[in-house]
Image 1: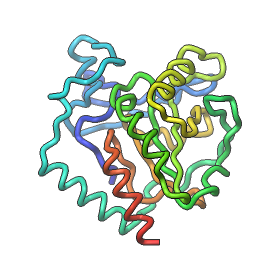
Image 2: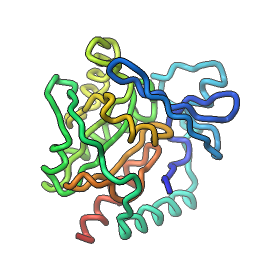
Image 3: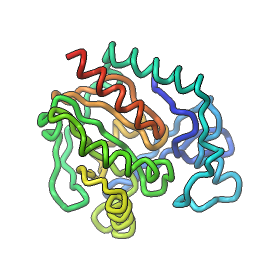
Image 4: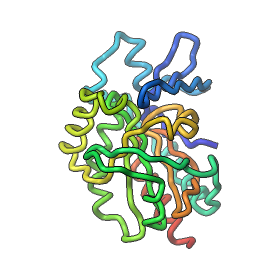
Length: 232
């Protein structure tokens, strides 16, 4: 089961109610068609209502979550941490570049006991809004935990526009952790993504543990990490 956090995520909603997630890779697009039986997402609603600027901050009223819902979400995160269920198997083998041009491979997971992988795009307001908090958390993580970003909308080395946007977003947010540019090596895992941000948890063997969190929910990410580590 994938964990959803209310309306805090972006997907492209079509007229038939499907969410289309377009992942732009080196020279082609990986397109995943996912049926959702949930409420409109923040970005889907904005598009349907006239295409508001995706870089603008979300209206505060659109992202309110009741205390009852939050308590339920927290309980779910706790249960997932205890079970550490592997939902998508393993992260794929990959060779990619980060925003600074460095080569990154799947060996990055072996460096720590747990890696938090935040999948995001420059078009996504909730992704941008949670970036400062992610940057601050990355600086405070235990020595055996790390965070990486996985950016889905940079279409190869020639896509300077989206590359520069990602650099600006992360620099302004103070998010100094590694930001990997998704390419075709990530196609299989990204076709499972129904919206961004989606956050995954990966152990040092590259196994996905716990449940993916779809939506901006930093408190939930933190809770999972704490409870996962306490069970080791």
